[in-house]
Image (cartoon, rainbow, N blue to C red; front, top):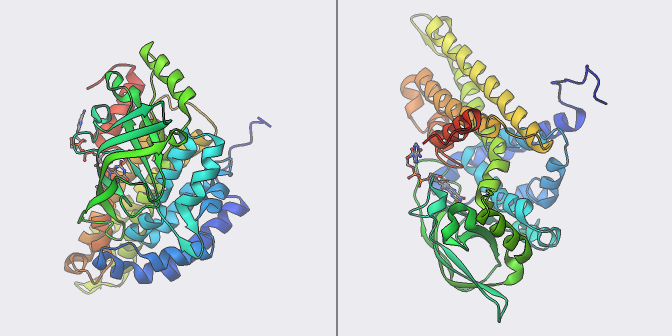
Length: 405
Ligand SMILES: Cc1cc2nc3c(=O)[nH]c(=O)nc-3n(C[C@H](O)[C@H](O)[C@H](O)COP(=O)(O)OP(=O)(O)OC[C@H]3O[C@@H](n4cnc5c(N)ncnc54)[C@H](O)[C@@H]3O)c2cc1C
């Protein structure tokens, strides 16, 4: 251990097998269904069922990918899934945001109790939602208005407020909801709660119509005097009280930020999957489309664009893999490496899909070719899980040690 020759960029056998397996599902099941579910703007339950049946959707799959101590398995799987299709990819992986919150902040007992309920079972898959964003609290997580108040007599938390843009909001079996328990502490006075299936007072208010990722359900969620047992506070009351005391003394960290930090490289990998799909399609098209008596790729303007697309995708993937490895091996993100990976991958996905549309010309603008959908799907990656501007804030604060605004 620790010898000088240990740096290695080849995938090991399990990682290669995983990539091939997820790629096969993406090619044979996801791709043929992509255009239809994009048009329908609905969760593709039959695809989810197929994924659950073969073990690609479920707790066991996540455990397997998380148990890879290089950290690469989850980004590898995500890249292939989203290479298949962004919307269906998100329908399959949206649950993992709630699971990551339970994993990141919950006790082992909470993990065992709630995570299987997030996924349901192979015959009857369910989805889960992580609800943090609010109408008045997007990038500014600290201005969250949803309140959770503890009632000692009944050992219950009562949660009230409104959440915005929740993936799987209202259709989820399990909702993980963040709320302020001490507004005077801003983002440090927040906690995350599991809202069990069927709890009264939680409702998916409005299904949102979107530019892209349309096979993934997004909705506003209302919480009206939602009562959950004390055991639904992720991490437990004692840990919360200790954390609040630390925050009062000047420490920091909160449940939502922690969740985002853990999931950034995996989200970057999704963006890379979409970008790679668009690049491959454009490369193939450019080799066949003939104008002025030769394939358009024989023009440097087109070939160089493709060269840049490939280079940017590879660069983004290396940043994603580095951040995933750092996260899995408890390395401190001293330069905001997690944010770097998501920032780069998101911006590459937008630029590459736009270039792909351009390379297809008029055909690229039509729904008959998938790059039109990929272009729409890619844009979310500079917005959710922290906008590009917020990622730049994280990085610039990390490298400068200053409170850049
Ligand atoms: C399809 C979709 C799915 C989503 N899924 C979920 C989910 O499952 N759970 C969840 O909790 N949320 C989810 N979100 C919400 C998403 O995370 C937020 O939209 C995102 O964090 C941005 O917040 P906002 O929309 O309020 O934008 P705002 O915060 O209002 O930002 C608007 C603009 O101002 C810029 N800006 C804001 N503050 C600064 C600053 N200090 N410096 C520089 N620029 C700044 C932003 O970068 C952005 O360009 C989802 C959103 C979408 C669209």
